Image 1 (spheres, one colour):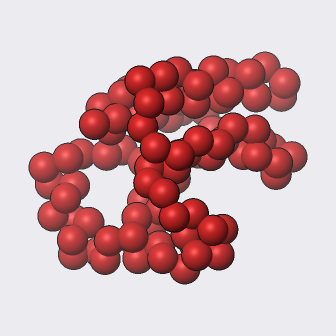
Image 2 (image 1 turned 180 degrees about the vertical axis):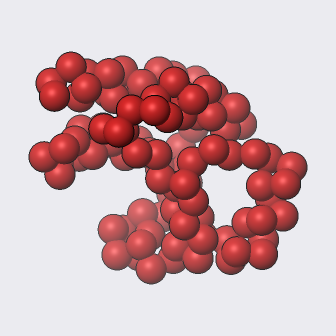
Length: 99
């Protein structure tokens, strides 16, 4: 449900070298490719990401993280709320002002 809004956010920052959008998918490459044919998602996507979800103890989806240039987590949320994309964008904007 949030993919269209996230794609808009990606479009806003796609030319900014200080912002990287990355999605970790649990699906294998084949299933992910099928999904993306009907649900275009502009993030860079890593398929077969169970290793990463286990390593970082992520077990609820969707999960969003904003990591600052200092390597610290600046924002974290799980699940989908009506204001999730707002907070993602607000955090990105705040981090860019600090650069």
